Length: 204
Image 1 (cartoon, rainbow, N blue to C red):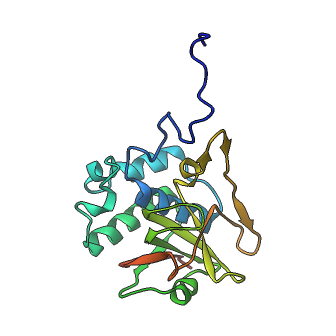
Image 2: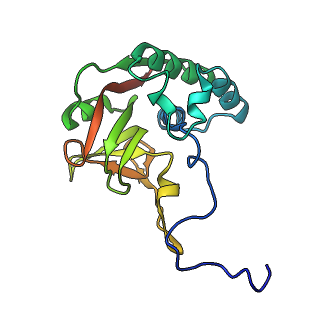
């Protein structure tokens, strides 16, 4: 590094782009995180490539301000079909996907999460650790103390940057063997988008 190229340690923002900054693929990552949470293993790289290669309207996911607000907006059948197809190509397991109609509150969301199930949800608002989000995550566990829902979020690492310290952590939930990195308080600063909550269960 040239002596004139001194690092800026005062600016409390990132200057280098990362995954998620320029794409709207949080729906796809939420599905992958659902697979990981339910199966306890990472999918193979070639399986992820095959899964992502066959989604409908892939250009929507390459645009950071589109994602599922383009061709997928309000098209619940298209969302569910692509969710199911991505899951089916990530491994040999079989999954059942059920879309929840109508509004979903904290209690209803908690009922969707169990030893063999998680929820893929779209939320808007402020999580415990991020602000002003319109985002898809995988809900992996409930928090009995706060009544919140622990989630696996694909952009928490990017959103954690604050000055020179990257304040990022993951929490292990021993009862389910799952990991989370953020917390939602439904009905507080967070609302779930009606009709865009999917319960994902392992078959058998």
